[in-house]
Length: 393
Image (tube, rainbow, N blue to C red; front, side, top):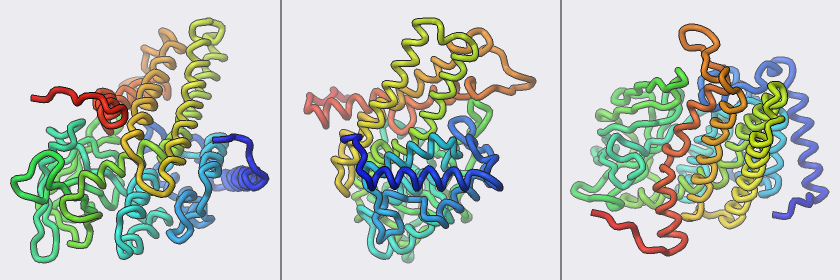
């Protein structure tokens, strides 16, 4: 997109900047910089309070149409909002999955009743969401989902297991891909259900990661229930809806994700200045390339958004996932190289690691979850470039 901002865009930027500067003070002054990869549980209640404060002022879901509670911001204004949010060192968002994944999916594919029920609590940050896709035998191969849902007495009964479910411990609802047609296989017979988490029949088990925290979780459904109307799309359309959600995650949502990325990169550059590592021409070159990579990501996210034009992203969105996953993992490696030998030593017993060690450890997962790099390359080659399909047994 043309980065020559219009007078309206400049006024919007000034409005965002002034509001953040005014409100990230007083009771919320301590919220600056909180959260992020490997720090997902940091000050959760404070960040939740901050985001609800944003909601009351109309600063959540800025890109959603006005009729659904958003601001109807243009693509350029959405970029501006995320840039200013990063520059203000505002806290990592707690409502990312609802605002950027489930919300756009319901807007694109949901019924009027579903929009009325589920969108307002997302705008107000009153209900948090998690994503129920991966399973022990259906990680990158999502089509192998085995979690079952059967319609009984006007409600769906759900049995099965999900894994790597981000922030499930905090979520009120889960959008889950379930097999609703007995005997079906692969992409057929899947449905996209909205399931309340706070009920008997749902058990969440945190997975302790190398960072010492537990963003990822196992979720067990044992006779969990949800209303018959809590299905997005028709029965059997779950694969289509799930792929659309991943498209939103890899397109529009990337802008919000880049808030944290930009803050991390600026921190690594500052670290390199303090340690003198920036004087190493090889490290300086890598820092420059990392900055360039982030700019390319932002422009590609904007291009993806422009191509969507109100609908659901296509398979081209896999480019975003491949690029940002690789970029973030390399940033973690770069941070360790800037630290040098100090990066190998914990700050204190028994396992007190600093932000850069945490970034390095957490970002190892970025090229695996939400579809591994290998899967993204297959999607791009087969569904975008039209190359022959990979041989399968």
